[in-house]
Image (tube, rainbow, N blue to C red; front, side, top):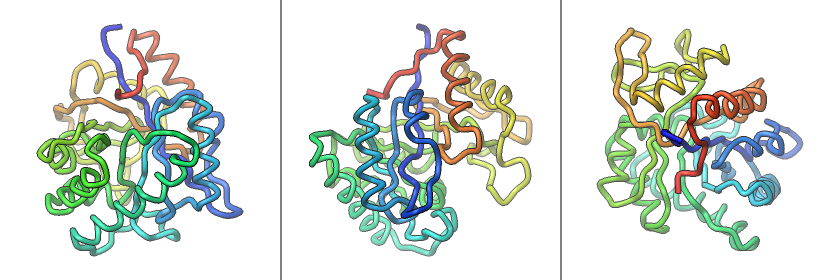
Amino acid sequence: MKFKVDINCDLGESFGRYTLGEQEEILKYVTSANIACGFHAGDPTVMRETVKLAIANDVKIGAHPGLPDLVGFGRREMAITPQEAYDMVVYQIGALQGFLTTMGATMQHVKPHGALYNMAAKDGALAEAIAQAVYDVSPQLILFGLASSELTKAGEKIGLQTAHEVFADRTYQEDGSLTSRKQPNALITDEEQALQQVIQMITTGTVTSQQGTAVALRADTVCIHGDGAHAVQFARFTEQKLAQQEIEIKAFI
């Protein structure tokens, strides 16, 4: 295979009696799972069940810490200090690690969620606090962050193995940031269009922005949103099409 890429998915985002996503099915097509840790979504039972499913499917496990905003699903920005960001990330990694320990499993990575992720992509101080939190818990953890963002820079600076993440279903701005969900055309709903964007990012190291410019980026891991209406269908479609392009789907490590 000429190219290889990790496929990650945000999982464990159900809560109590509310079910979100088809976890058991989508885990057949991804190599890394980002498991919600109870702040933006998830609860202890959901966390345990998701860890168990990921282990059964031989999928690498990561913590998916978010802002404490269940109602807003962690997608609303909050005014937090770097110290608060540090504390939130350490706390949530610890919550997931407890379940991994009981099942004899290992955590591979940490990927912030939603607004916390996007804030850290642009705010160097927040990015450094998050990277420090991950490093302090374990320097062996991999930090997942938006490709070429402040978060990946902070991870690399502190000495963490860092995975540059790209998105199949999101459009990009010419500065390399994701188009805000508040803006039109932020999401790509056409499967073929999303797949072509993924192939371009993996094989050329560029993405075409909404302004029509080619933006350089590194594609170590591709995110498929598990809460999407057709997430399983798209994951299956992606696996088939990448194989046709001789792109190997493989965990980051």
